Length: 529
Image 1 (cartoon, rainbow, N blue to C red):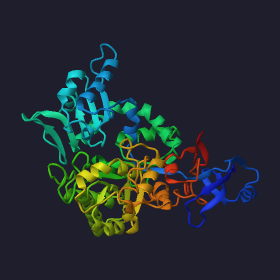
Image 2 (cartoon, one colour):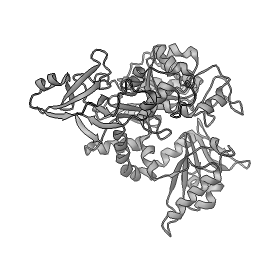
Image 3 (cartoon, rainbow, N blue to C red):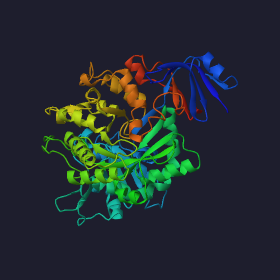
Image 4 (cartoon, rainbow, N blue to C red):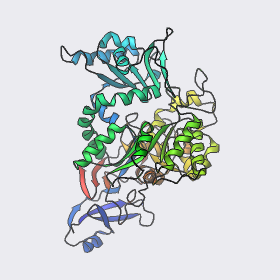
């Protein structure tokens, strides 16, 4: 046996029975001992010893909702986030067109992170604006919330979308007064386009994914729950077969393949500690910024209640079908009515006697929840996968659109107080991937500049302990891996990070700037500064 002793550190184990240690012994990817330096040396007298210099260490962090494929592909996209108008966005696209090889008339142009709500005039753009600079180059630009695509005419033609194409269930092909598609695809229409484009980007994904994953490891992330398509599963599988997967992956699968994976016998929890099958993602609604999140009461300038991307009856059927076949459901629900619909579906599945999968059901985002649903969420056992950085990004948007609603927003404090479970994540590339930025937002409800004073809706602020568990531990409920990771305990996976300050007691602003010095996965150093 080959032991490695990581010593001379303050290990914050997040295990209430043994909260601190100064040495950790790893062997064959597992923690074999936690205790004092002297005890560790006695346990493994001939081990390799690594002196951590008095630094602080903690369990590896998880991102329980991340679009890894889109994050990777972003490296090759046109970044439209600086644009303050549609014309400014088009100018950025024109710069990319000018960089293409002469004579290349058909290469795709991809871009993203445009947000019309931050433009001088908050109207949705049109394909004609793109056509003028892109010509025959098919162009696909995703909104910053990942729920809307802006396409030019060549991309619409590639996808076979014209005036006669019907709107898909749960989505909208925006049209002009003559009935022609404007190039804007909302919700299911955009998701369908994204799946169709996976073949176009497959080779780029295989090339770009490894560097994106290594960046996550450098930031202290040792486990992710990927929320993208089956092209990502293929890329992860290829890396795993070559033993080049740098972190642990739980792959959530799109509902479009539900029947197929049931026929294949796929079940939540299948795999090994590096790559596992997760649940099935189902959209209950859209997003607040696109005006498509589903609320109990009307909101926005058009006083709409939003969009049920999946009708409640179909949502009930899909959750029951998934659970009955050993697959957990990961229901995207941003609006309070969408959350209610998700809980209805969980209750109906349980009432029908559907066996619980290896991992719990989960609700993605839970940005807004009715007070009456707090005990229902706790009773369901579902994990609330929430994004603290989105909370501080959305302060003005929520106040302007939902300020008159009796609704709890980003209510992780209320959910925990009611007995529910919360896991933190980034939803990258919607937000940045740095997990310490999320921890700061979760414990202050403030931006790094201290706005707003005292925190936005401060009654939802988490304690440091609650936030650390949300960032490192709670995600294991969704995968049935509580016995494997999330805390530092003897017998669990030797996944931990070493950071440059005390994550338990440092001031909140310092938490935001915490830096990972070392990332250890499976007992081996995967990153060291």
